[in-house]
Structure formats: structure tokens, C-alpha cells
Image (cartoon, rainbow, N blue to C red; front, side, top):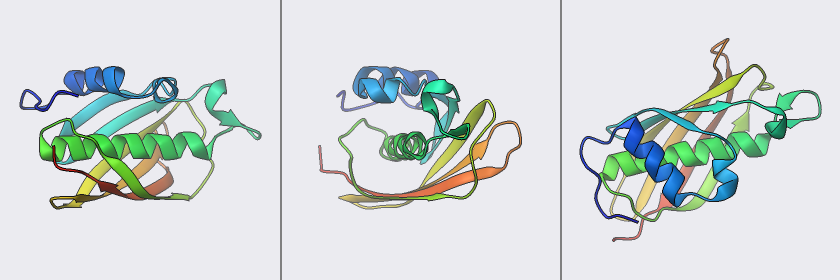
Length: 144
């Protein structure tokens, strides 16, 4: 991974990082970076049949992956560099069924030190703005 990012980090640059450094199954989520900067990120995940579970709602696995990815990008924006982040804890709360056309995920760094990053995320239905899930995570960020 490249050690530094041209500042300020833009959604376009973040989208390129997503395409170059994340696994194919994350790519299959078809995520779009809408905003990024100062320890936060806003992602959009369009909903399609490949993400739906029985009952016509988005699967919890897709929501957890969306939150984890968005929180990593909030951490990237916080540090200003692409680094390895290992998820050491991910807690997702599913509040109501996610339906509609897309889920928006706002992720923020809560606290960051030399080795650990604490982040939170909230996922809302795009059309209704109703919160469908929230998440918190701890990431280990080894020094580059």
C-alpha cells in the first residue's frame, strides 16, 4: 500500500484505494465513497438481490462489512495514510430491517492512539433516513 495520500483525501482517491486494496468480496458490495475527511467517511451501498436475505431485507453480513470498511476509511482519513488496520473487535447492532434502494453509512473515529483506533458507524436507509444498524469497532494499527 502507498504510505501517503495526497492531501486532502478526496472521495475519488478513496474510491481508488478501495478498488486497489480491498478484497473481491468487498468489491462485490459496490460501495461508493460519498465523503471523506477529518476522521470520518460516508459510504453508499446500493441494495440488490445479491445482498438480500429471506424476507427481502439486506443481510447482516453485508451491513457489518459496510460498517467495517467505512470505519477503516475513517481511520485512513484520520492518519492521512494508507496503513494496515486489523479489526480486533466489531460489534454490530441491527435495529430494523434494511430495505429500499441503498444504505448510507457514516463512520467516525472516536479516539485514536499509536496502536489502537476506536470508531463508530451508523447505517441508514437512503430513502427514509431511518437507522437500520449501528456498529463500533476497534482496530489495531501497527506503525508503518
